[in-house]
Image (cartoon, rainbow, N blue to C red; front, top):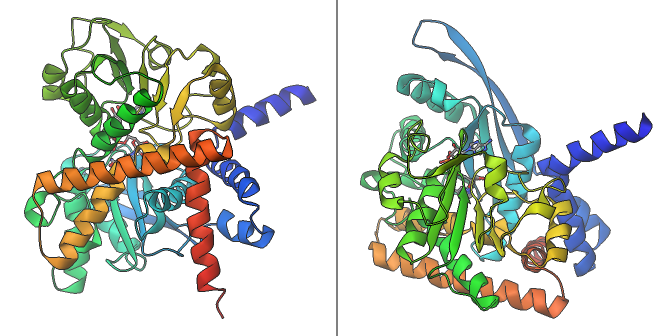
Amino acid sequence: MAQMATDQQHRTDERSAYAIAIRQLEAAAHYLNLDRSLLEILKRPRRELTVNFPVKMDDGSIRVFTGYRVHHNPARGPAKGGIRYHPEVTLDEVRALAMWMTWKCAVVNIPYSGAKGGVVCDPKRLSIHELENLTRRYITEISMLIGPESDVPAPDVGTNPQVMAWIMDTYSMHKGYTVPAVVTGKPIPIGGSEGRLEATGRGVMVVADQALQQIGRRLDGARVVIQGFGNVGSSTAKLMHQAGAKVIAVSDVRGGIYNPNGLDIPSLLHCAGRDGCLQAYRDADHITNEELLELPCDVLVPAALHGVITSANADRIKARVIVEAANGPVTPDADEILDDKGVLVVPDILANAGGVLVSYFEWVQDLQSFFWEEEEVNQKLEKAMRRSYQHVAQTAEQNKVNLRMGAYIIGVKRVAEATIIRGIYP
Ligand code: NAD
């Protein structure tokens, strides 16, 4: 009985995003020989705000929603991080996502600290009007935290450029003047950046290319499997397909489709984001999300939620390379199994940093009211991603660790240094 309870506890902990984030930080602290008190500072979020707020629904009723905004560590600059709308959002998850943002910004060396926000809701079950009401009220509730110099939100699961537009408008209405730099991932006519929509997917493609080169393979002709066909998954599929890779399987929350000869990505992109898009596709086998992860392929891209590759299925993963487009898809226990199998895992804090990089470019453009062409944005993104990958790969090699630990060593070291240099106030 006691053993059963321990196993259950272990399984729960293995998928607790915050427990995972702490475990990863402690491992990096060990390599860096980090001072104990500094580790205690880095482990805890600086601020956590929980808000419960009413929203008028279309049928005249009023529903109370719960939302969060968490700032992790302020050492390197304003807080930056996405807003997630999903029924399973928890404070535990938002804390982890905020911490991962801190390391991510440090790995690609942009002057931000990590934040994250979320509202417990199913955006697919809300009308457009309800979604707007919910967004405007949530932003009002967390308005004491956000601002172009303090905390700059962005899109994440369940949110999109339209939601970012309402955030910008709500904040600007409270101020009495237009403040584009308060949020990134906005539509282009109101201060969004060229290239932002596809930025995370573009970064994923760039690091997939480098990872394949590292093992003596090429992206051209590589077989790619992608879990999640939202903003990140569909952009990754599009760009990988354009680069000559063969995308053989994709999925959404309802399940996946698989054709070993390759899927017709341009036709799938027409319905991406619409309910039933993948289910209506004929020229493929229909499979579950669990089966999709275990398909034989060169590159597996989890681009949905965290905790999908665990000690329970890592042994059955057949990919040569895993590129973590989602945040936290591979648990630490799974990491060990994949290491032993020789699977190269490109960690989230590097792999999906293309999104925050172009968010940073958008913020810089908004602050200067001077906008760049798409080619310039894409070039700057690619250069930063290639440079960051090389730095991570070199650090991993020097320390004889995997890419995840290589990235953590860089990220945690930069944040620790900033914390020490700034000193403890007062
Ligand atoms: P999205 O809401 O646009 O798409 C999410 C996709 O995952 C959808 O296809 C959805 O159907 C699918 N999905 C949801 N629940 C699922 C489940 N239980 N099993 C399988 N699939 C499921 O979200 P997104 O913006 O594409 O984000 C995807 C991941 O990428 C998240 O982990 C997010 O944190 C991460 N990320 C996003 C960005 C960005 O710029 N949007 C940047 C960095 C990282």
